Length: 112
Image (cartoon, rainbow, N blue to C red):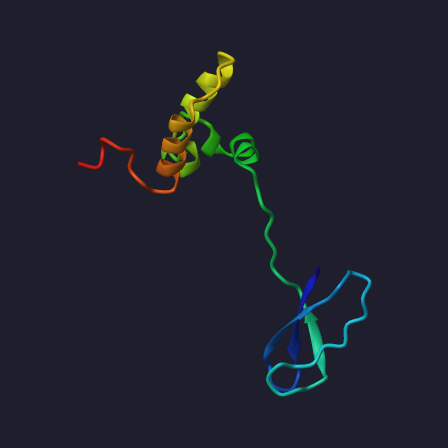
């Protein structure tokens, strides 16, 4: 569902309009003053990235990068790669510890 932003020529307010599809006809009405003189604005957007795509396309993926250790997605990455490289299944306890650390929780034994 596309979301379009419009700026009211009368009061200057921004209004977001949700549509069912790109081809839907949009008749924007100002959410503040009910004005019909609206100009479509260029909206900002974002794209979701997988951890793998971040590692492949940025310096965050390079373990010799200064920024590598400031990215929480890298916590436990070498452990995951080691299990994968040796064709082993990672125990659920190890997986849980890595996910907890990535979310900001210290692993058991380091909390003291």
